[in-house]
Structures are given as structure tokens and as C-alpha cells.
Length: 449
Image 1 (tube, one colour):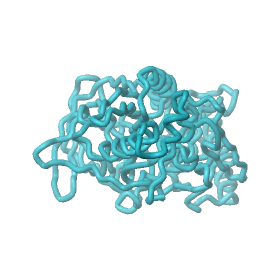
Image 2 (cartoon, one colour):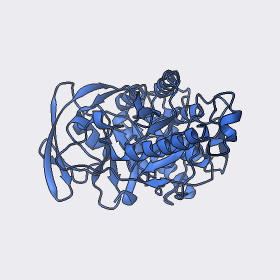
Image 3 (tube, one colour):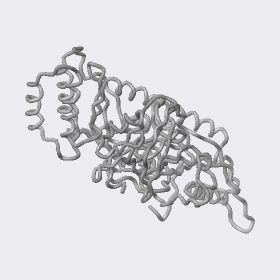
Image 4 (cartoon, one colour):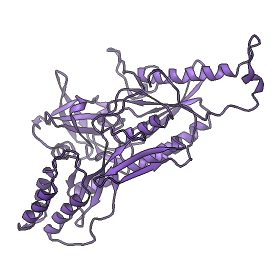
């Protein structure tokens, strides 16, 4: 079903599509003329839009400009309706217009403070259904048991068939403390889920040391999304765990819907010392290659957990780790969102998100609608009598984590055997050891490559 998704990820109230980069104003002209806003949007699309659906025709777009600017607009709302109709012709839900209120909320949200219930939703292009990508960990939606692939069919008892993403978002949002009821289809079951809207302040990184029976310390880091706070929080977490000298790390990107492009690049640089992280390709074929800066915070082994809710910026990070042989990917194939949106502010305070590029992994793979396959497939096995909670992630109750931990333990045992004296064998490594071993290569080779 995920293959059919028209990939657009939004957080209710509202965390916009992953892999954003913010740009300066498209125009310094300040005017009350609605036509100026329309023309600003038209110009941005003409110059920058990357067409991946094949619906954009430059000649038709030029012709459209003459038509829309020949019309008289009484107010901004008339202009906004025209802009939305104009953009719909592109058949790209990532390219969206936001009025001043929604645009301001979106910019606030990327700082890491969200208002709402905390879910990412997607529009299925085939069925036109609103589908949950994943709930944000620690939010009302997460605690209420909303799951990836849930289909939202009603809000407060009213059917939402045919509604757009924006219209759905507006119905779900509301004041803190108020209730919203979602009608959910989960397989053949219909569920009513009541949620209390709240201000959601997210700490994007959870970290701790897990001690294993083999004696290996495993650093566990769960990254929930990529916002402006993420690189700093990840850096602080790695540095704190490094002081405890773990053997290796499990980096958990499951159900991480993505976020800011620059945040994913900066976090990748904390794990990767050398090599390409990601390249982006625009409509003109210009490729911007982003590289590591020899400033990785650790060289210890790492296993990355991914699943079908890992999207966009998560795929940039996991793809960079995989292609640079920096670690092993465990879990399920990722979501497959490989397009980059630029966020452009317009002269009246409104804004535009526009698809401007696609990104490629270091090996040159285009993952849009394809996703990234794990090196080792592992499913999340749940006991029907036990519900996996937030506190279970990264523990013995988490079957995918257990697979990742076992990979590190096997490597730990292998390293330990090389430095344990055996009087019946020639043990040159042990005899010659004078300093602790440093882990220059963190790649664990398997038969799954």
C-alpha cells in the first residue's frame, strides 16, 4: 500500500513536508495588489519547479500567466483561490500555497514546537484517502494508539471523503484542551479515536546506555524528527554517551517522518567522517553535492533501525550511513520520499512550498517512491496480549532492536576474542597489544549485502 502513496507528509497543526530548505523573500516589493502575489508564485514555479509527475508544460504555464493576470481580483482571498487552482494543475501536492496564518504556523513548527495532536498524514493518489504515515512519539496521537497506515475517514463524525490535505489539517487543529474525534479504518475495522489537542514540545532525541549480558555497553539513540533543534540535541547526546565508552550504537529512525534538509546533513556529519552525504539535482540538472567534514563525533560501530515510517530526511541519513559503509540498516523498507521543497515567503506574509530538487544517496540512488531497503530485514513482532509502549522501544520487548543489538554483540565478541590470551594458540594480537583498539571502520559485513 505504501508504494501507492502520493508522498506528502504533514504534521497536524502543522509540520510541513520533510526535506525543506528555507529561502529569502522571493520579492522585496511590498504591495496590496493581489496580482503581485499571484505573479510572485508564477515566477517561482517558472524558475524553480522540478516536475516529477510530467504534468508541467512550460508553454502552457506561460499562457496561463496571461490569463490569470487579465482577471480583476477584489481581495487577497480571491487571489489565494486563483493561486491554489493554478498550483493544482502541477499535480504535485508538495508544492503548496499557505496563507499568512498557516505560513507563520509552519515556520514556528520547524523550530520544534508543534500545536495539535501530532500525526503525519499522506494522500493516497489512487484512492484519494487520507492515510497516517506515523504519529509523533510522545504526542496525543501516539498515546491514543494511532498507527501508520490508518485511514482517516471522518472528523468529529463528519466524513472527509474528497477533502484535501489542507482542509483535513484545519479540521483536526484547534485550541489546546479541546477534543477532536477521528474515525479510523484499520484494515477491516472501524475505530473512533478521541484526542485532546495540546501544545507539543518535542525533545527530538532520547538516549541511554543499555548494558548487555555479554558485557558490551550499547548506546541507544532515538531520533524522532529533523527540526532546528535536532543537530544540537544529537551532538549533545553522542558526546554524553561517548563518555561512558559504549562498544557501539543503535540509531533508531523508525517512524521518523523527516524534516529539515540541513538538519539531516549536519547529523550525518556527526556520524560520518569522510564521503558524500547526499546530492541534490534541480530542474536544470545542477547537482549540489554535500560531504562530510572529517568531524564525526564517534567512529564506533552503528546499526540503524528503519521502517516504513522513516521518510525523507531519515532516508538521507540512513542512505548516507549505508552507502558510506558506516553501519548496518535493520528493519523494514523506508517510506520513499526523495524530493526537496524550498519554502518561499511572499511579500504579503503568505508563503509557498515548491518542489525544487530530488536528492540522491551517495551511490546515486533515487529513492523517491522506491525507499531504502535494509541490509537485514526484521519485523516488529508484537504479542497480542502486550501493547508496545514508548518505554519498550530499545529494550528486550522490541524485536527489531534485539536484532540490532545482536549484531553489535557478535562484533563485540569477535573483537574480544582477538584480544584474549589463549595459551594453546599463537595469539599475536594479544601479545602485541599496547594500546586500546580504536574502531576505524564501523561497517559490519553480512551476507545480506
